[in-house]
Length: 357
Image (cartoon, rainbow, N blue to C red; front, side):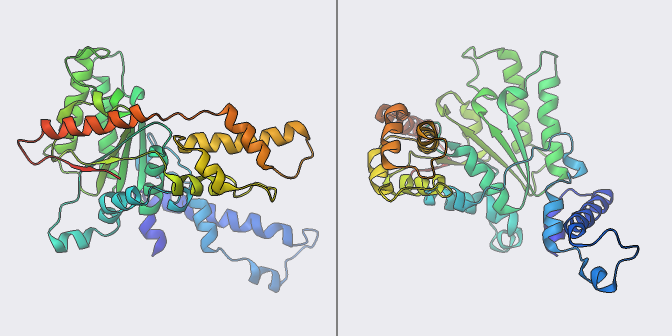
């Protein structure tokens, strides 16, 4: 039953390939345990040869469903526990993306229509892409990742065709999450001269047609992220398109402490290392900055002695001098100001739900 639930978009040949690969996984695991010099295997040896659920799960990572073969992007196995802090953001994503895909009957029973699109916005390095990967993993949905610049083509009509193909594949492989990274590169405000304005307008129109067109997006959620929400065309942010706008804030003290714990999980730390002090010293640092601090600390210990077996507090202090905070107070204020402007822009009607943490 579990395998049937997670093999969205698999045709019969894909399922046969999955079973074959699982059997090969079991065989590779079993071969080192037997004596190959014997002419025949004993009954006891054959009794041990069984295909386990773990073999199927390992094979699942390697077999690509036919419906996604052209656009499928393999993603890491990211869980909510791999992301420090952001509890409110995680809960919003569970409700907006994970619940509709995992429990569609519950939404039908309550007469609720889930959001068609979710936009993650906030300072760079705060975990927007990581959140998108985690929600795809946790919801057990297929995942199509699209980078903004990959859409555009110099040939007339090719950019719009690329958008159509992405959504066609997503409908085939539903339940599915379509993730647009750097959506500001795909859908900037029209009329302000961003790139080739004619191509950009056609791409935005095609994107709007797919999101709220006649053909419904059943069991398909559109997820997007951006560092520049101020240059996204407001037409995308109206009700029925990106219904849920979620601000991903810089990590607070608790989140920074959690991020330090995650990135030092497999690091041999000396007894003098105080993660709480480091969390207090890193106000204004993004999650990616903290990851860089941990990595640089380990490298500093190795530079001193390639045989070092501990990372000390002084290594972290030295790394802090090299890695500077990437988030400023002005940057945070600009995101709040944009949200306020959007509220005024949409005040005549029922605007999208703005989420602040």
